[in-house]
Image (cartoon, rainbow, N blue to C red):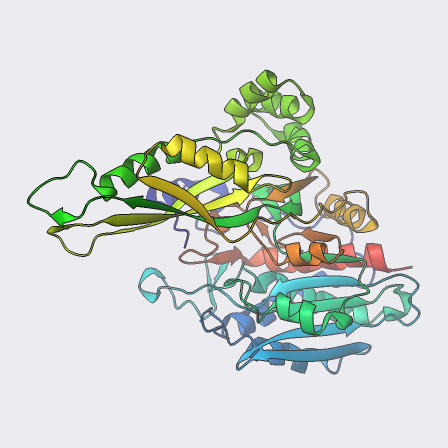
Length: 482
């Protein structure tokens, strides 16, 4: 669970754009796309999102079948929509709802989102996590952002598109999944292994994973995930002599583990550049106000000399997100050792989350962890086998261009940026099956609100709800209408 430090939260709330009068979300530019009613979309999406928040699907146990059935009841009477609810375990399930074009000439598009949420500590929330609450221009509730906001926007957009399905030349498929937050087999894995025939003809897919970034009252960028890192669990194990706590021992396992972990924590593995993160920094440089950062971004985008790359990376790595984008990331997440307050244990362990860029080498990273750890008593071992990352989704497809065009119509000054996600999503499994997948969190958000995902008091600006529906509607209309 990610919690926002109090000092950081206070800083954001002090910003004029986040004053208590409510967050400033700029209105959509220009006229709405054909067939789209902005006021109705805002009202319908907000109401549906409130309904979804009120359905407790925190995982475990999930209970996503309740949301799937709710979507089924909403969509079953929609002209041209076929609904399949596929149960994967008691109380668990996925929904595949297909809006059929009257005369399709192109392959379908999948729009995917997960119906489960992470848990919520009721003692840390200012209002009940599963009671949708409007306050100061925000809607609060678990799943508001991750991922029920995008799901609500997609369902409402499909209902609008169904009214003009005679003009569509592609089917549009909603895929609502279970178990994303736990990585369990009840979700997208179940659909791909047991019911792939329902989506196998898709040409493109949209999923969570990107961002629509708002700063100082304007949308500055639309970040579209085209690939993502691979997640590995690495366990560090230290061994030493056990004994009575009254007699200190030089080979204390916890001491050896602490020394090794301290060195690994400071480690920055080598920079790994690929077409995705080069293009990411190239485009980001066009809106970066800091001249040193801007120069480093421009350099990273094109440089081939290792020394030049490393100097630019040193500047960019001052930002923790950029640092994670440039190299394999290593985070210490758990530590265990000891059984009694007066017993020196014979072993101690720590768990590390290691995120490797596509094309990276976990075996080489592991060798470096063991070298830098530098303790004869400590070994670092990866759990599971190395696996290749799925190919990056091209930024030259009609789907990416449609999203870029929709973003420009929504916010003419914003830029669209392809990027590699440092986190994991269900999209990787679709890319593995040969379906180019683009990640985008549809809600326009300030950074402070992004940081609340998985944290306490998750929320979205109420004005962002309708904007999300407008963006997905326009993107789908651009790529799927004649």
